[in-house]
Length: 296
Image 1 (cartoon, rainbow, N blue to C red):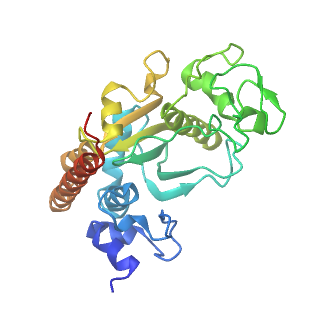
Image 2: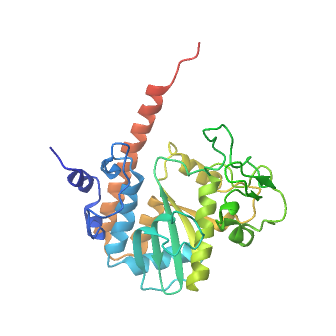
Image 3: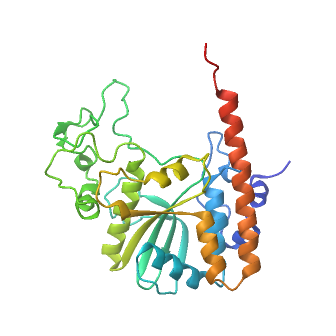
């Protein structure tokens, strides 16, 4: 029987394997049965390792990240260090569970906070979800309210828990924290993009670097984040549209082909990613078809 790690290795671009120092302790995403999810063709963690693991170990790394930095509007300058599944152990945002991002790239002048998506949409805030009592910790707006779980009054339930998002939101999105916003400007999956944007701001401030947040995604019309990237990751009414920059895996690999020296490597990665996207898109269409209900 094939082991978990054998299955995962078979689903990762071979050149990316060296980016994982210890396969047993690496923070793998796991499914409900505790099996490593990265053995599946549609795993967002696997495609992130395909691309950023290959970039991490490549001799072209510095020139490619310099080009990506210039594209997203921060200063180039190596050497670049890449950490997969980076955890904010400094808890810069005051979160009780440290934020973990898919990749962090740090150069001599800038840092790139990178969230990776494949076939899934962005994450949403949990505070509006119903508790077992039926109550909600947030009413869906940024307005003066009392959290029924802890009795704390605040405009944002997360602020009431000591989480510092709204210390950075005014700078990043030019929103007045003293004014009510109903509904919350970070409803839906805009919430995850806001989190990454304010984390980038916090890292930049903490490390005295320029910083940018990137949303790396697989560009295919079947995938929610790819469709959202076409319209804009944050709501059109928000200032700070450039707070997080969407950039597809295909675009990053094309940048690598333009500035890199190892053309065989980038051509191979391009073919690998294209094939994986095609398989995942086919699976996505099949899943939708099998779960659809015919009208009466």
